[in-house]
Image (cartoon, rainbow, N blue to C red):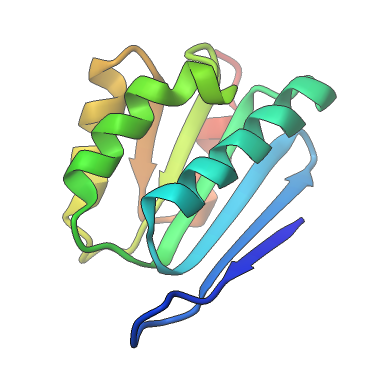
Length: 133
C-alpha cells in the first residue's frame, strides 16, 4: 500500500510505503514528516498487523525530513495502542547515521513500554527483528 501526500508548502512530497515481507511489516517514509500522515500510517500498520497476525515492524526513516519530531514522537508512542500498535510488537527504526532523533525515538518508545531498537544498518535491523526473543 502506498500513501502519497503533497504538503501545502514548499517541501518534499511525502511518500509512505507499507509492505508485508516475510513476517515483517516494513514502512518506508520519505519526505516531510507530518503528524496526521504518520497517525494515518500507524493506523494502517496496526490494521495490517492485526489482520495478518504480524508482530514485527520496521520503520525506515532514512529519507524522512524531521523538523519538530520531539512532540510527535511522544504523542505517537502514547497513542500507539489506540492506533493498533501493540507494546508486544518488536519494532526497529532504521535511520541515517547523522539523524540525532534515532536515539530520542528509541528512548521515548522504550520508556513507554515498547520493544524498540534503532539502527543505521539495514542488515542489523533485519537480523534483530528476525531473532528469537
